[in-house]
Each structure stands twice: as C-alpha cells, then as structure tokens.
Image 1 (cartoon, rainbow, N blue to C red):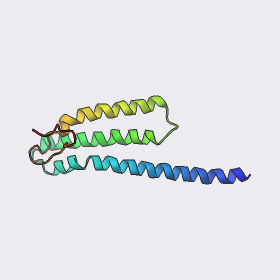
Image 2 (image 1 turned 180 degrees about the vertical axis):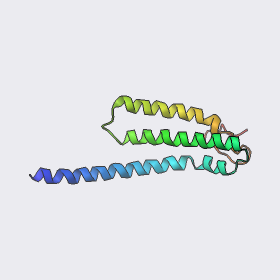
Image 3 (image 1 turned 30 degrees about the vertical axis):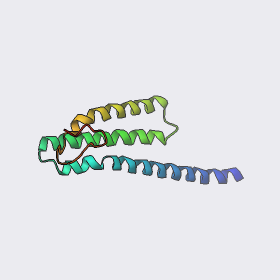
Image 4 (image 1 turned 45 degrees about the vertical axis):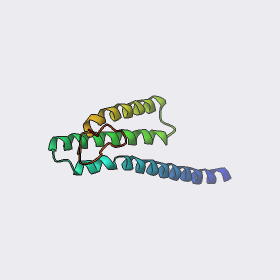
Length: 117
C-alpha cells in the first residue's frame, strides 16, 4: 500500500520533469528560427516571403517532433528514426527556401553561411 501512494507522486514528478524538458528544448527551437523570422519581416518579395515562411514552419514542426520523441521513451524506435530522418530532409530542403529571404538586408541563415551572396 505504501508503494501505491508513492508511485502516483513519482509519476507526476516524472511527467513534470518531462514537460519542463520539452518546454526548454522547444524554446531552443524557437530561438533557432529567430534570425530567419526577422528576415521574413525584411523581405519585400511576396514569393520569397511565402517560401521562407513555409520553410521555417516545416523546420519548426520537424524539429519539434524530434524533440518530443527524444523525451518520450515509450515511442517505437522506428517512429523515432523516421522523425530524425524527416528533420534531416527538412533541414536540407529549407536552406534554398529560407536562404534567399532578405538577401543582402539580413543574415537570415547566418549560422549556415548559405544565405550570404
């Protein structure tokens, strides 16, 4: 009986720790797209603006899914692997979508060095 009283508390603490970790990691995701998001505000071409927004959104979704999988140990290993491969694919595809945004006005993908002329 004593162990039954302890288990729910431990589960609650573990759930809170997992949620705090996920929030912390998600904050990193949003920080990583800060420069591209500012670049969107400086882009005069509507076509580049739309493509850049799609690229940023795809990257955020893919990275969020991978981070969720990282803090959810009971997920299937194949699901986790697919999420990781999706992030790799999306990251590669977003460089040409987001790189040209605000070219010459703002270093949208400065950490990759691909956005500069």
